[in-house]
Amino acid sequence: MRNYLLLVCCGLLTAACGGGSGVGSPGGTIPFTSWDNVPENGTVRLQGAAKSAAYSYDLITDNVDVGPIVSDDNAYLDITFKNGEATRVVIGNTGAPIDVNEADGAVYQDFGIVIAGQTADGEDTLVAADELDLGYQYQNFGVWVIGYNTGAGTVGTGSFGLSTAAADLPTSSIPATYIGYSAGLVTDGTGYFGTTADAQIVADFAASGVTVSTSNTRLVDIDTLLDAGPAGELDYSGTGTISESTFDASMISALTTGTAEGQFYGPNAEEVGGTFTSSGNGIIHVGSFGAN
Figure 1 (cartoon, rainbow, N blue to C red):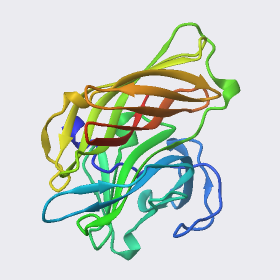
Figure 2 (figure 1 turned 45 degrees about the horizontal axis):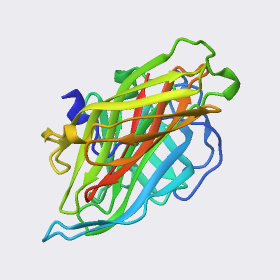
Figure 3 (figure 1 turned 90 degrees about the vertical axis):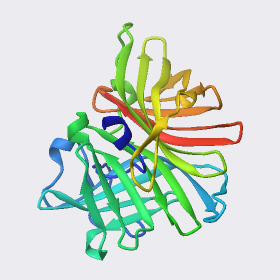
């Protein structure tokens, strides 16, 4: 249950840094410091990075075409709370902006380790890891789909949180190991699935090196959220370099190659998250991850 539910289109319940407003976003956002400090009533903004792509889907043949993947390095996530509950989520500064607002008929559902949100017309969907269940204090991550079951739309994946200042990264020569989860979307051109996986990030801050890997990847039927079977051929691993409080890593699976881009979160790099893109053999796999 923990693995297959933690996916489909993650990008929801989070809190944020910064202020201002964007297209569709509530005004008057307040700074995010941790999940312990979100307001009972108000809007918080989480700054982060996202990737997005346009897609078209033939509802008869199941053929899927995905456009170029675009990096959106100034993406944000606005969450509006009412009586302690998230009632509106806006993701902006991305090629796949989304607004899921209960006031417009959107519905949120708590699955225990994830919270899913869908617009009233059923076309825009997002699902986020439940930060309390997973023990996150400073981040969240996810994937979302716009125009679902309409034949065309956009997909987005992002990592958002309270970024660690470069000066506050650990300096220990003992590598730090972060354990968490990965969520994504994958297509081979003849249909698409969600993916879930366990994720591990090992950071050697003294040497400015990082390793990233996933295991136990499984497919998820997006229509039903049911487990659609193992996909170990999509497990990936890679190495990279830490710069400031971010990192870039190359990655390879049995079928694809690509890159993972990460960010350390929290006052002292207590957590880490990021996004990944990978392709090869007619497969495109995109997603995000979070760990602590």
